[in-house]
Image (cartoon, rainbow, N blue to C red; front, side, top):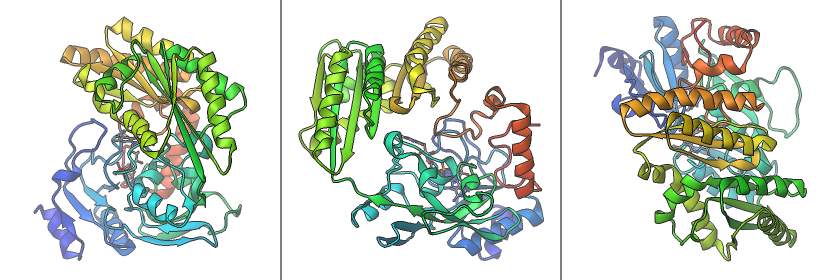
Length: 451
Ligand SMILES: Cc1cc2nc3c(=O)[nH]c(=O)nc-3n(C[C@H](O)[C@H](O)[C@H](O)COP(=O)(O)OP(=O)(O)OC[C@H]3O[C@@H](n4cnc5c(N)ncnc54)[C@H](O)[C@@H]3O)c2cc1C
């Protein structure tokens, strides 16, 4: 046990081995902290932050470590403060249509608990089986259903959080409405653990839709699939999810998929509608027709829950399946206005061709948020991939979008923030950071590029 861990244990804190807290899902590398603490309650969090301030030691909050931007990595050493043991669902209230949760609750567990009450918490990052509510709040996570229902931010009514100065604050309200004062709740959401450590959240829940219907449409290429996205929205439909798979993603996932794809497919769309009545099937049928008009070779509607699950299983396999093309990938989550999707896909293809790298695009096409992957094997290809990524991010900005639609800036993209935001806006965020964290000890160095 390190000397720092011994000091923390002497304060009555529960320390842990540092190795599991040295990495996350970002591929940014290994950053072992000097000590790891597993908080058991808000008082533990206050103790750690008071200690950090007194001793000028950085603290990095951590949920489940599934983040893709390196936000939970201890780049400057110090203490990783894990919230995984704060994992109680405190309350699910049908009367108020809210739930109260601790940050360590795994998202899937919360979804199951509210659904058992006939209620619905829509945010659904594809990591739902492994990510925690605290990480979702800190990254303002989205997912396929964000298209119709919005992202995590849209469901946060109130927070309890510990400031870097050690004070426990309560922001927001339990009521669905409320406009008093600056909206500190929404400022903390998406702040990537740099302003405060969230220890409890009051989240809005809505009635669980009674029916859900899903289709999978196969296209000759991804441009036709992207065109179908425009047609569906142009017809005034709002599916709850509309996910695109491009040719390389389709070909990679095909051997593992739980059903056979038609020959020569070069793109696909998953479209899902939900609601409370017969209109759901009508809307699905209309989306299917629009896919056919856009050139779909085959449209398959799931006949039961098992088939629906298999379609989504296929979608979730893509990330791993891409390793059959190249063993490594740089995976981006850019977003563009929906009308520029076809252009984005074309620009990614051109960038890949120029650098001689395979690419694959898939993801939340309905809201213009695509996972763009640059695939590589050798060190030489990796260097090319890093150069190519800059062009992909720039393309997203040029098309009116953003360098990150949902994964956050963290460590991975802080060097690119100044491409998207003006110097004044970055400086204003630095001033906000100083107001919360005058000694720059809470998750230092994340989001904002060095001054
Ligand atoms: C296979 C896979 C699929 C994914 N799909 C999606 C997707 O569809 N949509 C999406 O948005 N993301 C997705 N992600 C990314 C990731 O799961 C999300 O960003 C998730 O919200 C991170 O949660 P976590 O608990 O793992 O957080 P961590 O990785 O532990 O931390 C993430 C950030 O949150 C901060 N943090 C954690 N807890 C707290 C707290 N209590 N208070 C303050 N700050 C805190 C950390 O400091 C860090 O900056 C995916 C990841 C994987 C591996």
